[in-house]
Image 1 (cartoon, helix red, strand yellow):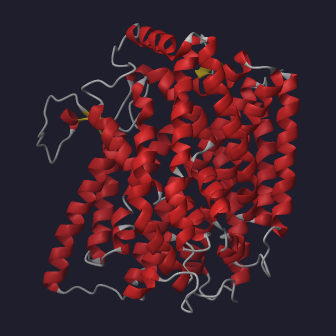
Image 2 (cartoon, rainbow, N blue to C red):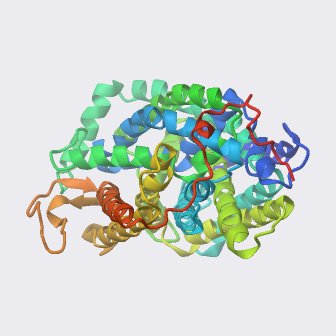
Image 3 (cartoon, helix red, strand yellow):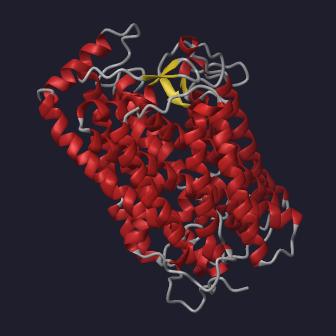
Length: 544
């Protein structure tokens, strides 16, 4: 047991727990028994709070442990997260502003609410809601992967159910303060999380390279390690076979990120359009941090870091690379601060994700199909209960399923959420696509994407299916026709699936328009997409 680290870690964890409960009174509205207040923090967060909230939401604990671990194991491929978060903000700058405006006019809480209003179809809204919930679940589970990596490094590495006891305790605390305070809890805690993360990473990237002879020596030792691997595919630069995968994974991930319900929750909680614009300009500062963080994967090679064996599975846990590096190279008290930063970095996004999934369940399944006349208080109660179910479902993922499978599930989640691109993002600009074209496109994109993922195996880890998201072009088959037969160049499955989705949506739309199928009713108007906070058309907050 690393007692110094454990004491510092526990003290900081206690601090954020207190903040989580105090948050219920912070910027409080008239009531928390309304989704506007509980699920969206009163829709009044300003620039600074939104910056910390959205940053805390997008740059998760899993990011902090997995990106350096991927660089440690696979080299340059791990840096795909960098261009992805650089191109992300210019792409989503305008769509998010439009989403905020139309949501404030009509009181939308979820992306599925918008789809319901735009197309007048509860079926299309249901598909978007289910996709959001299913894609979010493994994402929450991945936060636990990051938290467990820290606990394991501090010596809490038991086997069986008891080995997960610290995780249970952490998540019971998280569940309680999220239930009480809603979105205000992660918004307040995000200040502590981001401050700690910035301090830890900046100290690490200045101090550690000087200890190992500078970046030149670190790159040399990393390249020597990759050259000695059997595949020879790894390295500090990309190979000819994985450049297309790198590009499509970065672009696909950028398009997918703000389709996730938790990303939109942070945006809809902001006060106005200018707040979002400022954030889209300022959030790339986190990308600089992410780039520095990814480099720690190379530093860990120079430091001779060995991943800790997971007692529950008996296999080395590569996600412990960064925690072990900090524990090995820094004094106990500073390592404790670093571990707390990663752990708190798990709680903030896990809370926002569970709230977003709960909002989807409440608004687009419970109220739509189970209790149409639900009052705002009943909606809030339902969302609170659903957020508990989602959290403990994520804990069950980790306890009963190999954590590696959770990582693969998150890759699947990315492919899934990308299939809502035409119905959510494109619909913010045009209603050209027909309702049935969107539904048909979703079915084909989802089905084809899942089939391609199912057929990706990895003999090295003994998995025949769902072992990754990179597909060799040579294995791409269209009803038996193989346009790239023999090619070993890899591509991201999500890119193929969303192209198939769009093609089918276009074809069915053209047929539907020619045959004049019913296309639902649009309750939104052109002006709705430009309304700002001072407009009299903005729907009052938390009106019963």
